[in-house]
Image (cartoon, rainbow, N blue to C red; front, top):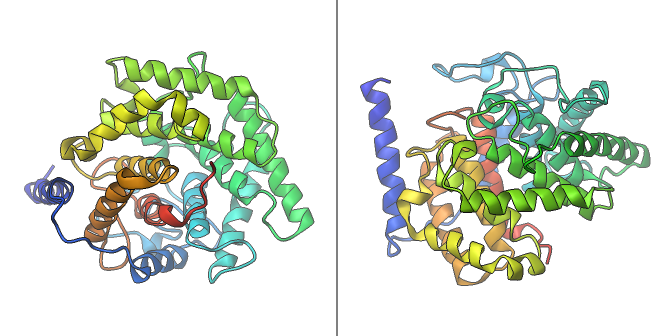
Amino acid sequence: MTIAKISVLGIGALGICSILGNTNRPRIEATTPNIDKAVHWLASVQGRDGGWGQDGGETSYVRVGEHLESNGNDVANTAVATLALLHAGNSPVKGEYRSNVRRGVDFILKNVEDSPEEGLAVTRVTGTQIQRKLGPYIDTFLTSQLLSELDGAMGDAQYNQRVRRALEKCVRKIERNQQKDGSWNIAGGWAPILGTSMASRSLDVARNKGVMVDAVAISKVDEYTKRAQKSESRDAAAGVSLYQNAQALEQLSRTEKDRVKNAPQIQAITGQLADAKFVIGFGSMGGEEFFSYLNISDSLHRTGGTEWDKWNNQIKTQLVRLQNEDGTWAGHHCITGRVAVTSAAIMTLRAEVDPVRK
């Protein structure tokens, strides 16, 4: 690593600690222009095939100096980018970027429909940056989450049926390939706990959309999460407490019943949010931090109150300060690609307006 790179990461880390450690620091609003600029960039770099890759949908969009770990567009980046467009107020039938949503969905559906019934993969593309960091089947988990949110909202009966069939296929794949310990920490990845988080979240949303989901699968990942919280090992989280605790907070706080039952664990996790060293995660900002912040924001938003207000103000201030001039965010370690990181940032900034399931 060069001296210049170390300097950038060090400055970023100091800035984050300063923001989170100083409650008297002036609040910076995540205004509509902040979000609009990011969403506009995301839509503008969509590929001709409807997909997105690590740093954009065409090679001409890739930053100078960004190391591409695979060529072409992939399902995971396309799914998270399309999710960000949805959370920014677009849908397949409304919004400035509705055509981008439809094109992203078409890219994903083609891959899911072409994938075999057996196995967990929904794509033949391997070795992408996001797969190497969150696990080789992150494409399936993010696709399942996206299709769950789109279920019944395509504006066309035939289109809705196509989405439902693809979603059910993803759910079957996820259920059949759950590990004995209840996780989906499968076949590597630097921080596969985040993949497990997305797999579980997708099943939860699908279940609430009326898709048949095995209750045993949900129960097993609940128990896995509780065991992992008691263990000193953080291997599935790359040794980073932020990743593991953010997954646990989201998993254990989905309903009012969950929040009552898991109150001690939830209190222990939220008590760490005042610790800047805990919040900074690995020590610099990578995509894993951004996805963890999204888990925390979605979790705290469910109950509202002082803890949510404090966290939301802090994280929005942090993200706005880190936003690039072109509206993007980029990771400084591991997941560095602008597509995934910008998408996670958009969804975190928009968490306060997302509907809350009680």
